[in-house]
Length: 248
Image (cartoon, rainbow, N blue to C red; front, side, top):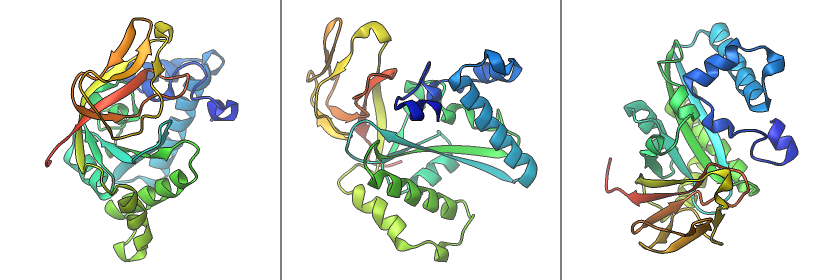
């Protein structure tokens, strides 16, 4: 929230790379005046979640992490590698990208699980579109509504068909399921600059120049689809490459 008010992705560190047990323990044990903006955000989020758990005493905790991307193109969901997380992701009616947890660290998907929470806990991430696209809000609402239906919080008869149709229509022509090929991680001094006009799920060829950095051209390591090309100044990942899978 603090970064959003300043119009940036983060102030000190990417919030969605800080969800490690060690970092959360450090935050919980520190004095508030010694915490930076992202630390405070984690502390406040966890206080809200634990308050809800204590108040409601749920049988299960379902954590849906809603995101947007800098690039235009398709929507998609990222599950944990568990049957229940994948089931929920599929019902969001967007491409399901598997294997992403191997390519990144410290996300909410790594933290919101049975190791760190008392109720049976499962998490799914949903990417609803480009940051400034107004329809990204509609797609996030549709995904949230479908998630509530899938996990049994609302009856199927109470969910309007438009929530399905919004997501199905935007996912036309995209793979039903895909898997991570590689993550191109970057450091602040890499001088990374993405080549212009790439969109989510755009096909790329092996050897195609995707970006430049201090060492020269950054090329695709194989024929694949590009995901989340970085078109903002902040971030630890330049892009991801994925490949379509035939089935689960």
